[in-house]
Image 1 (cartoon, one colour):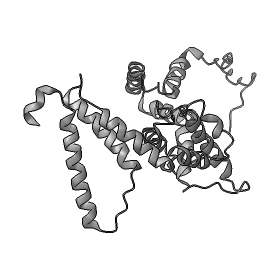
Image 2 (cartoon, one colour):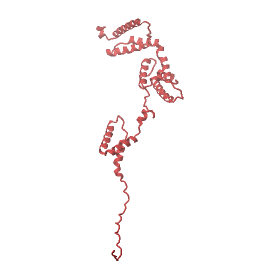
Image 3 (spheres, helix red, strand yellow):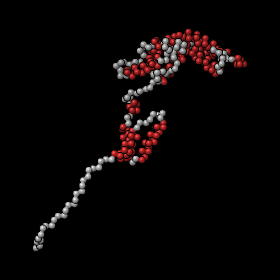
Image 4 (cartoon, rainbow, N blue to C red):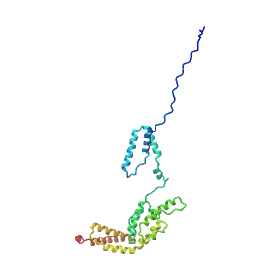
Length: 275
């Protein structure tokens, strides 16, 4: 039989005192400064190639940051830098963005006059070729239709060639070509006026200068170089169409013999013993 107990029932144990709830700590931005610094270092563009000291310093800082940071943070910084830096080179290579070229206003220091078409045309052709625009003056790249998507780019590049031609001729020749619509027509006009069409007059003037050329104060090498330049100009203007190959060979054998005599005759008197 259960025993009855008298008195108040036993009280339940008191609950533990509740701890005061503190608000979440605010982030300490000072701890994030190294991360922002690293991201900025990796996102900086490389200096120009000429600034080699700055480029080396920037790469050294990047390597130091990569070594000091934990591996996961370093990889994250590299990924962010890769995404933030604009990929301009890829866009240019793909043809998405227009390329900006610092093209010169002149490609040769020689200016065309009435007497130097041979040297001028050779120098200008080399300069235009070095810029990748030779087909514009040879006619191998004619103008497309104005409705063609490539017409704007063609007009820009052809205008660049026109600027080079205009800036390489003398002031009295420029009005003759300024109104020409293409660089190919400019080139042809100058070739007709100062090129092979004036063959007879040019041949006379070149031969006259060859016969008048003497060594004087020049060295033997300089004297020969001056003669050789004149001979090349003469060969450019002289007709050289032969039906018989053997006659052509005999002609040039005689021509070079005459040129040898001409060279020896122009030397100073101290070389009399070798004449």
